[in-house]
Length: 313
Image (cartoon, rainbow, N blue to C red; front, top):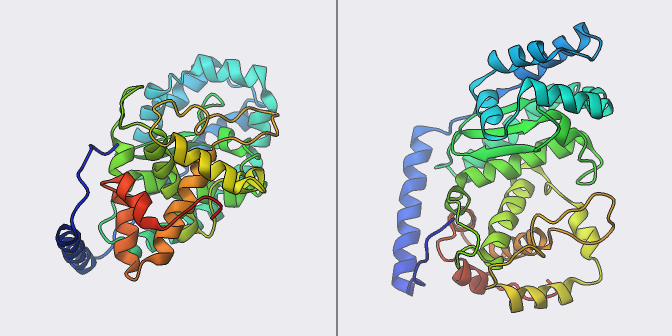
């Protein structure tokens, strides 16, 4: 997450724009890279799943993890995924792993669409970083992890998250695009402790909302279109509450508050941040420079002011 910065005067903003333009030219001359998109971990898992009639042993699952890609090994280490925990989850909720095979069948199309989306990202933001994307199988959660080493998505977890988007192919493509935007964001790279004044409602909302906007820009839609449905008719009220609470360091009412089987609104900060980022982009004459500002966002408070967004937009 970004360190505090002063609002740049007009001359400073012009200098920053010139530096951005120069970096675009250098990156374009070098040619845009593309990430590796791996699905071999999923293929190995389901080969084992089919060979054991859906009941692999703990030892076999440990072997699946040990033979995995670097992305799977990192995912397992960071999220405490073991053969024993996968086996326990498979026994407790076998339908999740059985039903995930429908998403497995979609992965060739998902790969092609993700590759196209990330090519678009490279064209619009030539200095983009392109670490690998990996789709793996874990213990039912989390949906995935994103850090500078890449994006790793749990097939079974995201396949079950139909509350986000009922179309599983769109869901995979747009969630990966959203998470890939985070790789480009300095704000997403720094983990601030709870209560840090920088980690407020404004910063968290704009960081997540910017990623939603980038997903729409490069992949044709946001990762979670259901958010707009749940705020319908309350847009101005929610926007006004955001402005009042934007400096609060308790963002629990705005972010990461989905509850299964609840019909109430959740993650409203994602929706607000997306609307702000979209307003900023629409106003900008230089769209490439605008996208760079949306991703880098050195001063979220100034960005919000410059976006022209207001409650109800």
